Length: 288
Length: 288
Picture 1 (cartoon, one colour):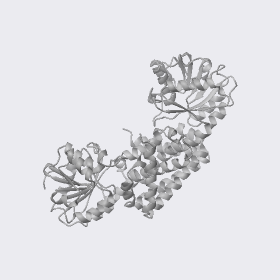
Picture 2: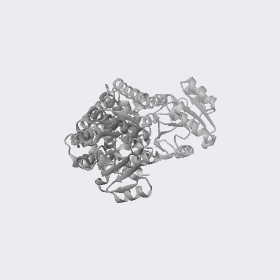
Picture 3: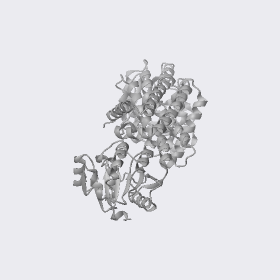
Picture 4: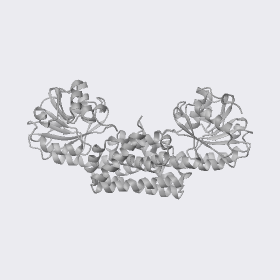
């Protein structure tokens, strides 16, 4: 197997994630070459002009000579592309994705022909802005980069991907796809759902009041930030993690109803217990 | 009526808000003197040593010669202090508070003797850390500072308080106490409730999984930030705005249940509509 710096990369989808990966690999001079595959000709032209990639175009077959094929599109596009990648990837090619849910992707990877070396990936970072223009060579710095190997993933493939993750400044974390999807429902998808429903509820609540904007301060700004996330991306995430996301949202909704009851009843002791517990957990989680 | 720079201030409660006000007034050299009233002798000593205030102690009667008495304690402490301030405030003294709910405070201010000049105040800023050590002379910069005058608040008092707000870099916004309380239930108290219940739900969801911390990234960090808010302060806020807060939480909880249903059923069109609407509203609200 080639080393990272001898490898030719194909990055499919030059949005926030794929664009940031291209920028990070280039900034570190970490690989031999990068071809970008994106349906947006403008993005391809800009990436070429900036020297971020060596070649760019819309056709997935541009990946035919790559040592590493990175699928950096929304989850359901990754699933569709995986059904074509098997016929394009050269023998021994590493196939990795950057999708935010892993069970369905790993299942689709399992159906790849035996000559491909698939592994799931999920860098735990993001922004509420999407697209190549928001890409950042430092997006992955200090970030947990989840890797979900398959039964067929060879140890050298895992070692190779670890070296890629470390080259862009992230911390590899090997974890089972099912465990990943269950955890991110609570750490990532539930926060998005709360931000979106906060925005909807507050807008409706203050519909006829032009002072809403003036009274939406930093607390509202931070808590609602994720509501601005790219809808196409989030739709794919939620729909490929339906059981866990619906479960986490309903669990939170029940807690909110209990909180509303305690507030409405003026049950100060119950309320203090609930709020102190959350405050203590939040301070412990981000104590550094 | 004296001008701002001729005025002696008494700031009751030298926490994040009162401490920041003292620092801001001092940094701008905006008033003649500041006496701090705080039950924490250490805080008083530190504020004196840093030259932030001219005098400090635990006794509310230290406000007896002040031109302006600022109540910067939690809301229910403000309510208790207002019942004593009437007997302490000299004739013509401005009595203002920095509490986050206004209806109960304005009602208590209405019971002050006629020689006091009361007005409600609420700077729309904060941090998830409390106390004098977190105080910041720039906390109010560019922030909306709500003022809720009473029927008895004289125009010169309102003008004086406006000049104070502007001196510390904030933007005065005069608004009715009832309207304020209804709006902040959605813009401030609901975000806190969501952050706290996110923290509780996610902790419980991932109770037996030591990887929870590694997978809690920037999205979780921002959405849960307010959960770390000072419990005593938040308890007072929620309990003095019970009707609106319980209503806003229940409205949000119903939306979350609808969202969970759409996700569980895989109702892509409904889901896209909901998420696009929230994303559009969020981008419009913080477009700058």
